[in-house]
Picture 1 (tube, rainbow, N blue to C red):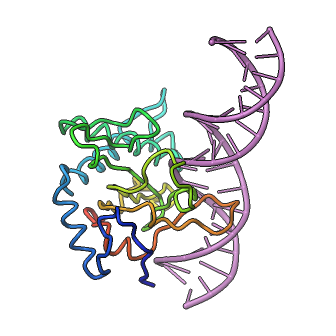
Picture 2 (cartoon, rainbow, N blue to C red):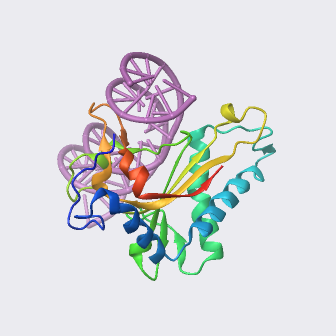
Picture 3 (cartoon, chains in turn red, cyan, green):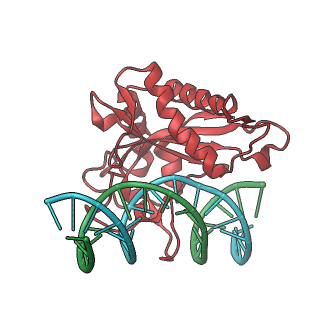
Amino acid sequence: MFWSRPKSSESPYFDVPDNERQAVTRELLREHPLSGQDVTNAVLDAWEDIFTSTIGVGRIGIDIFPTPQIMGFLLHELIPLRVSSSHNGWRKDSEASEKDLVFEPDLRFSTEVKTSSNSNLIYGNRSYGVENSGRGKKAKSGYYIAVNFQSWREAGRNQPRIRRVRFGWIDSTDWIAQTAETGQASSLPSIVYGSQLAIVFDD
DNA sequence: GAAGCCCTAGGCATGACGCT
DNA sequence: AGCGTCATGCCTAGGGCTTC
């Protein structure tokens, strides 16, 4: 299934045929101050940071095995710190309206971080995908770093690994809210994975 | 006007299950 | 096995209302 939703005129993919989207993505990433290697390094370093951490007398990975939810939260916090410590102009978000990773010199390069223990896919909140013009807290269009990591269960006796890192652009209109109002998930159509998110690391 | 409370929207996710 | 859909949990910010 390779369909696309209509793009608004504010999207960099507006009026771009599906088979030319990859070129637009390459151009978007070329303009970005961070390279794919920069992003990969920040993610892998942040991941290692988790396993060199202790909470009280408990060592993560030896005494403490946080749920994927918690591991995602830690990554979410540590990736911006890793980027800001090695690249000028970057800082972690300080307000809900900001993207997770803020680039002070030019806010359009600010980047959202999304993590999931799903092997391949990332998810947003249902509110991403429903019509709520102007009421959302932050712009959902923009640069994204998407990280898939292993859960403890999958890793078995080994230390869980980063499976995949993607870097690209997602428009707010790309998100598809699940139809049931009681649910909270939004997913992305396959064309977004195929043409708007570049794989910069694949384990 | 300040403080406190309640409720909802929005944000972060996961697990179960059916279909291909 | 992989993917899509649906159901669910927990937390926070903020608006609206009431009370002091």
